[in-house]
Length: 451
Ligand SMILES: Cc1cc2nc3c(=O)[nH]c(=O)nc-3n(C[C@H](O)[C@H](O)[C@H](O)COP(=O)(O)OP(=O)(O)OC[C@H]3O[C@@H](n4cnc5c(N)ncnc54)[C@H](O)[C@@H]3O)c2cc1C
View 1 (cartoon, rainbow, N blue to C red):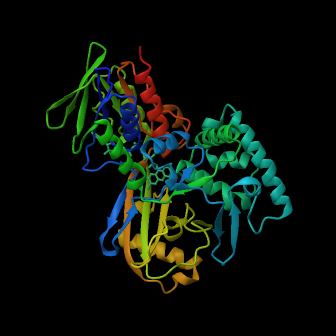
View 2 (view 1 turned 90 degrees about the vertical axis):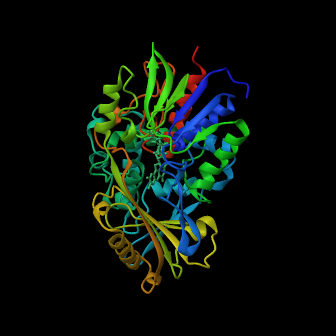
């Protein structure tokens, strides 16, 4: 370790904290990572399914090709090759109709302009015109965009119903994790604009991909290797209570057990749900706490279903149109991970904006998801559930609803040796892994370039 004699402490071992710790260690710094749980990974982690001897995830995570900071992290921890970008996906309707959607090249442009089997030529032309308007307004936002829901924006640009049903509504839901009637048009527009810029920079449209391994292998195992090589100290079950500041500089982090971890620089990489109290000694703490509170939460429910037979999916991930009306995607872990089916076939379903599901029991959710699969896949009719995991996350991300975007605090604080990171801080992205990674890049940059 070359070191500058300063002690860097990162609070929070989710993706943002891991990225900060890895990049500070790469820069030769003396780093301690504090994580309140007994494991790293935060909201992206694998779970053991004992009965079927398998490892599934707490929720399916997809990755956009424009996630440049996330890819930088994966390169740092040696797992970049575990993400692939399929060229096609499938949309299904309950009556058995299905459409193959191209997700790259010219086919992707066709997808943008309407793939619904019921869309006539007039609808497709309207969809093309509306898509161009949407793109233009994403890059040159009208002054009132921040006051609109995504639905109002789609209506305003004249997006026809079939194009919304087959693409735009669920794309917007996927990005903001909120139903279009609640989701902020500004959030959607910002992500679209970032996507366009990435596409121009890399001369290829932004594509959606997925990991071919579980989330611990993707994010945590490689980080632990870096930590061992570079001498990073990881403290598990270390609950940070308050960052101590004296005369405008950080001096340490007080833990719940009453001990203090001495620090010269601190990255606070906890979610908005855990920030209160930590920054009490920072002059602007009231402002940050009230933003954290106002940002609120969106629930996500994930279900891992191990079935006794294959469903007959055509793609790694498929969109079910007209399902629960929120967002229904089925991820086939056999295609994605090439996993053995000795103990059953694993299908992962994630419901974003799960305001209704979140209050139901695990058994009810499994029955509901099986009923959904039976409407779309004939093979599901007689399928038995061998094992099921239901993960209910009431505070999955902050709520990306109208008016929230401007609340996100920057990484910089008034104390130069204290920075913030995490998906909820101000970035070019919605609450995503890329937002977590970008916030980490900015936070580390602020510390490393400080005079
Ligand atoms: C089910 C689900 C599906 C998702 N799907 C996608 C997707 O498809 N694509 C995508 O890009 N994003 C997706 N996301 C969002 C993505 O997972 C998050 O944006 C990202 O993981 C957030 O990382 P983070 O480091 O900011 O926060 P976290 O992962 O929450 O990490 C914060 C860490 O801080 C720790 N901590 C908190 N308080 C303290 C304290 N006082 N002391 C010490 N440690 C503390 C926590 O235990 C945690 O480990 C999904 C999220 C969920 C829940």
